[in-house]
Image (cartoon, rainbow, N blue to C red; front, top):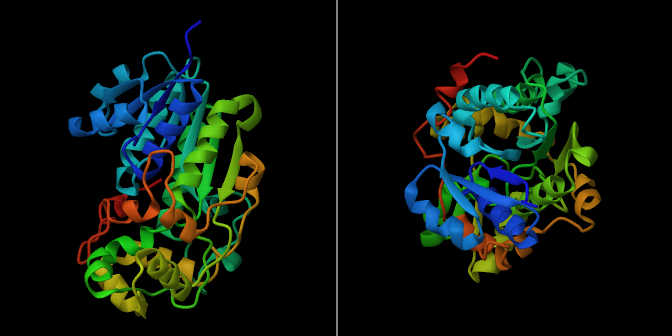
Length: 326
């Protein structure tokens, strides 16, 4: 009897490659990994992918081959790719007789766009709207739900390392990083934990996890000084956190990212959720352990820190996506 096929989108990303390795080791699926660039194909096969296919959310001509025979989908996309994801969600809905389960990477707080959302309580300040990035994450979930699919959403806290990627040069060369979070505590999550949760949810299937929405967080909320201490210990050098004003941060990265960081700075991501433990049976990975130990893909968090970054100082990566309407 042939194994069911799972399609892993964004397979060469931080979560995707870990998920490919985990599912390949488990052996319950035929793992079909998506790649945008041909030069990623060999590395995905080395991680254990049974098949590698060219896939582009913005090119529907690549979808048929990717979805042929697929019964489960791991769905992830960068926020600027939202429009492509919304179109792909409709295509998945057209195949809902075939596609039995979709696990979608989302963001903690996306659920505040549902009936529980109260602007007076969930906004960062009086008169502020919920951050646009969280609205986009909700649209990403809702598109799959509206398509009639069996959906599991992993609503993740802010990624460990993600807030540091804009300062890799200053960390490596001068030993410091900056952002406007200051003493605010956030329960940053290890991307390998998201992959672990996704692997369990996909393996156990829709009978157990359909229409479930899990908040995946780290084990404890940390300040920037504590993050700097963990990073310095892992790198065996002094790392300094330098506070930055929100105004300077917005000039560096644009208003959409700034409003999300304002949300972070006001304590909305401080909470530590039990969902990862309830799914996997173990505690989430601490930041220091993430930095210094290898995941299933063979990388440590410190290895991952220097790889890829959507956000470039002086560029608003969200400019086009911010113009989209729900």
